[in-house]
Length: 99
Image 1: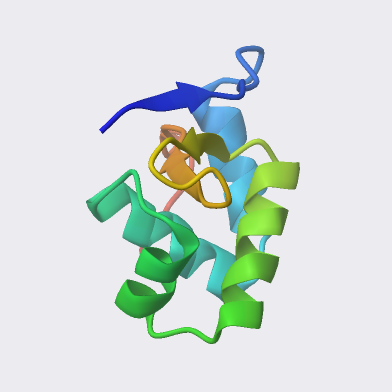
Image 2: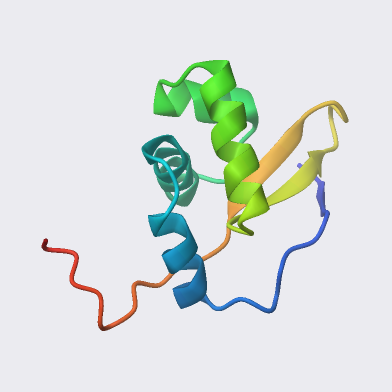
């Protein structure tokens, strides 16, 4: 499979991306988690794995892209489709996730 990158934001750190992800709705967090488990994926593949409606998946991906948390690439076998890959996130040391 061949895919081409459309770009990403190299100016953000994984910790900054984590802070952006925290502020997003649960559907966006779920989509990001699905992508962390297995990527790259198309919208349909994400929707199937996350058990989300098409509209919710599109909205979640749009929010993730707007925040610079996923990379979108062209899917060469079908140029109408896109592949999505998450950018790495790191939980800052000062954040306590046990709350």
